Length: 227
Image: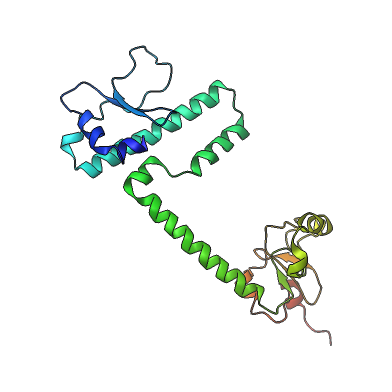
């Protein structure tokens, strides 16, 4: 279908004659496409694509018309995917995995409108920015803060230790909310009571932690010195 709306767009445009009857754009597993009349049986064996795409061809700018067809084509492909999901008895987890697989690819509309290329360029810039940020943080001399939830491991020992690290610190509890340690969350340790906290629970971000020489948790900060 992407081929019809991009590489073969002139042929597709000619086949969508407004003088003809209601036409639909079909895409097939062999990467071929076809403009044809809808199936006669009711209800059809498969969900049908948008009907009458040819009627709006001459009443809109070419770019807008192609984008409209692309949006309806996306909707049709989603309906076909979940139709087969229902036929094959997909459960909640299967449907979620199917949707994620679909969502990993750009939509037809994104390809036709050019927004997929913009998103790709944006992701590349973000990736470069993140890599630079990671390198900057890895060079920091601070040894008190880590997103792993415990004192940092030397880089040459870090590879292959995730599972052992998870087991060792899995019983660590947040001093604020009481939840267990999670390797994908930022944690910070109080230098006074030596308890660990979720950064979000004590309102400390990784960026802010980089500039803190000695961290006191809210409890330790509120304690008054005894006479």
